[in-house]
Length: 204
Image (cartoon, rainbow, N blue to C red; front, side):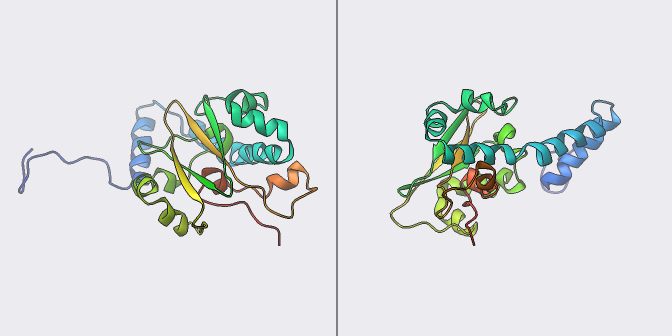
């Protein structure tokens, strides 16, 4: 109904994404369309049992096994599926490797496409309008805000995830990790390093 100085209807949902999600959840629950307990179980599974531990294991194995790494870079989907990491949001995986000459960074400019079977649920900032817009326009500034400063000679490649293809960054193996087991290496792999907005932990 027209009012004030404009005539478009206002949305009934709050503007903040978290509040909008909560409002939608409340409406769907009241209508009997979803079970809050089931939602909690799904969130717990992806936050605490899947990601980003699965992705870290893949990276650690690639650091340790050259043949696995070659196959992963060639066609990641069947390789990670053989490890048991497949399912919704992970049907078509592409792994891109960081090198001294190139740093890779992942964004979904349209929404929040993300490799759930490897990294779990995406962080809030990955879904934000600011990250989605700025990662493409000014990736070095965004990386600096995440604490990642690259050499001038290192190029930045930004990969735009879609509903068809999702990306995982294979970060460079930290120095001083020769002889470490895959389990020890996986502990050095951070979620952000597999998105490209961070680096693996360094040995103290």
